[in-house]
Image 1 (cartoon, rainbow, N blue to C red):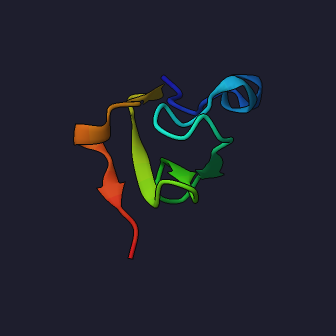
Image 2: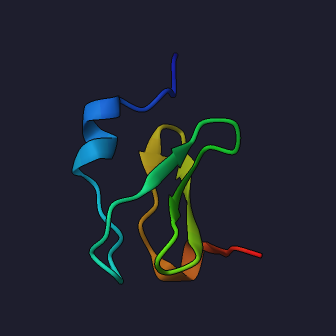
Amino acid sequence: MSTEIDRRVLEALICPLTHMTLRYDAEKQELISEAAQLAYPIRNGIPVMLEDEARKLD
């Protein structure tokens, strides 16, 4: 079973905090919000768009 996320879905997603676009990091399986300085995880092909689950960027 592939857990790769569809690029069209990624283009439709925005950061829930800043409402800005996200950058997909395929290697880390994360969606990066440069504006919020957060990385939202993708688990089993599903983006987890919760601030509490996001990793702060360095």
